[in-house]
Length: 255
View 1 (spheres, rainbow, N blue to C red):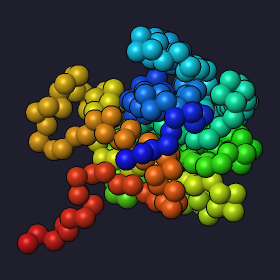
View 2: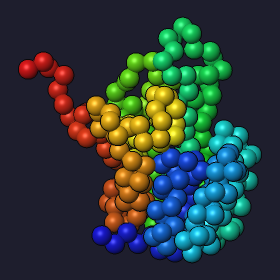
View 3: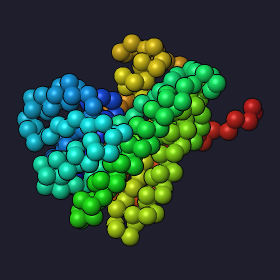
């Protein structure tokens, strides 16, 4: 399948780790010009070094706090200048927040922190990239949602709520930005083998190999991101691409 990503200008948040990192690598290997945004500057440097080792020197690294509007605005403007525009925006920065906590033990600060990164972050990113996207010939936005946008695991109230909000943010943006020709879609994976998931579940690297439930890789999710960002998905807008091994399709009826 021809993705048509070569030469495209792409901004990826959360690029230092997990799905964001895998997506940034995949875009760069397709020939896209990529701006790598994250608050983890050390992780960004490591990713840039890996890209350079493979002969890719065009990637730009920019530290950003996705919850701070001035930080997002500045990073976007620097990225747009370095890439000579913005064609694709991928919002992968995310946190899980308190894991396994009863609702009445969740501090307001912890609740706000999750929504600030997972919901306000994508909003600010879209807000400040939109003037650049409107000048693109084939603009696309991909948000990282989750199967938790549809179902809820116990002990993850802030995360579940935030991912439900991301899904509706995607739908609302797809409607509002359609007149500008900007497509907005979301990927909604179930559990992915990432540092964040391993930390939440107390799993060592490679520890998911013996799990009694299916686990996908960040590279598999990155392929979904690239498809939604590419011209191959030109008619697709307002869509939630669920990759959960079919769990959402299963009835809970005990028969």
